[in-house]
Length: 302
Image 1 (spheres, rainbow, N blue to C red):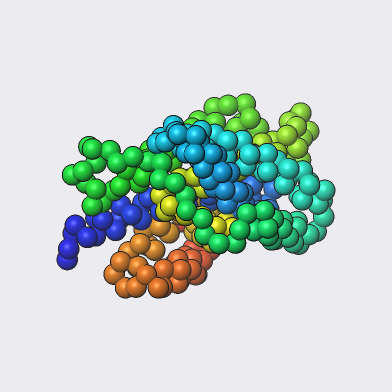
Image 2 (cartoon, rainbow, N blue to C red):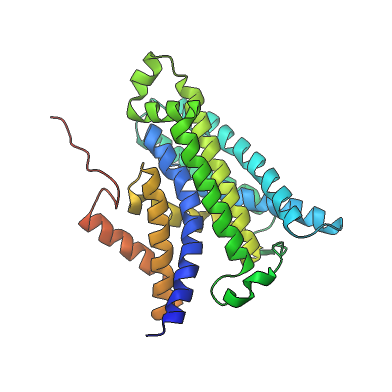
């Protein structure tokens, strides 16, 4: 066995899995609080990438380059996507909060289709070249076979982002309110928690994570189009289910497992079946452990 090739695949899988995990966190946080699958979440990821593309293009034409452009593009994309997440919850989901479970699901699918077509009409359905913003770091030369400079930036940013999210959920006031709302929404409202504000904050945080993922993956692949949100959204949802939907550590684990499984399958069998490996793994996990890798089976009261 070529262990160098295996290590190369594992590094690529961890990088890809980190992006899946960032997007999956948005799915699992929203589901954990209001039991809603936000199928428009992938489009928020896509919009973040497009906003970064526009900002990066303007700054590049103005003579700027490198990580400064990437940082500013990411900040603008985060703010823009957070506004989209807040508006999406306010318009598409909040009026249906007490409606039958199918109604908000249909609204989510409708919002996803609307946002995808909106970007296609406002921009283009074709692929657009995303500028190369991450310079080649000299110290990466000995390991450039395994990790590029863009890969290193992705790993550092995703690690710091997930650590910040963990601190926010465990130690901040809004994080404690989110955990209380997740445990019992009605009781949280009775003890004085503004549930509507907590739910809006959850959508905003999830949108911020999706925007960061969009900017990172666009800077790595060097291209974007209006359909990237659909593909990434489905993969991230798969990762969330793998880890246990509603479980934050599970979303991270599910993303890493999915990314590594896809990369190993593509490397040793065929890249044409990359999506097949992902969904075959999902089916296998659902058969052997329906609650996901870290999920807990829910006991029904009768």
